[in-house]
Figure (spheres, rainbow, N blue to C red):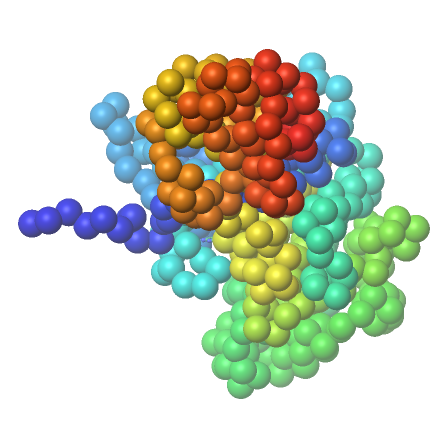
Length: 438
Ligand code: HAM
């Protein structure tokens, strides 16, 4: 049997060109998080399965997790998400760490999914989380971080929107308006989650299966039809649930002065599949109808630290995946051209006597911070241009018998199509000609 050259189903090999795109995305993520003073952290690839059992939800545990018994009979999983890990880490240090705690990471995660557009088995996910922020303030900041990232990638509100809802509102609707028991509430959460993905009669059928009355169905449809913040406010007044929804209503009000309101759309279908959310929940959506999917998901979680028997510490954050982000950037032609590796200089020599001088020159220029590739062995100029055409070097040196005798080097700037000869020791002038440090 011959071995397949393809990577494992749903994972990717990153050849240099693709890897440059990934590195570009990571660099914008890091720059954005650090501009808000979020600090990088990291955790292990494997966690005990119980960590996810505690709060991540049935779908993740039953269908998506990669788990196995280790040699010490511990049931472990490859991390399918980062939030339980960050909560576990914060639980170790939060007592002695000044609040709020602002952390970010870009882990690779694995979920056993059916690979399709926007969904793979391995993806990299930018996670930003804030713990212990004053009520309502962390929510706004975390949305500002997400919006800044999108803007730093060149996106505008024409390209994306943030769909938002609040678990406190959804819970109040179930407990105080529909008055459903816990089991029915759980089923109806799933119906809401599917409500935009299936036809109306399928929703009707799911509601009947969940055992809700005609009156409850009417209320449920009234809930689903709410499509802006004004209607939400009237609904809360009409059904006297304003008290339970105070946090969400105040948050909406605060958004008006924070520059994020223009990106937000209230959407009752957003409830999020993970069990730990207790406050606002949101997803960033691509506005392009051909790529209408979530690029990012997040929300507030008040009780995650309690699974470690710690005092409650409110957290809020988001995860934004590289697969969906890359699709988004390509859809809107926002991915920069990273086809060539942007090497400042290719050093070549046309006579063996030029080798040692060329090696030295290459090293001196690297020490000045330039990216320099050395060609091994002497090479004819025509062949040099075949190489520079393929890799897109910005400059190239030539050193033949004459240059060696003169202690000089000829350099061609391939962008400006300009050639100049320099004394080999005139490093500063050479650096200047090469256009400085990239
Ligand atoms: P999530 O909604 O499961 O949330 O994932 C967040 C984002 O990760 C998705 O919007 C998508 O961009 C990406 N993603 C998730 N699964 C896949 C997949 N199979 N293939 C490609 N991309 C994927 C969470 O994971 C939460 N832990 C986020 C969070 C952080 N909440 C608070 N802090």
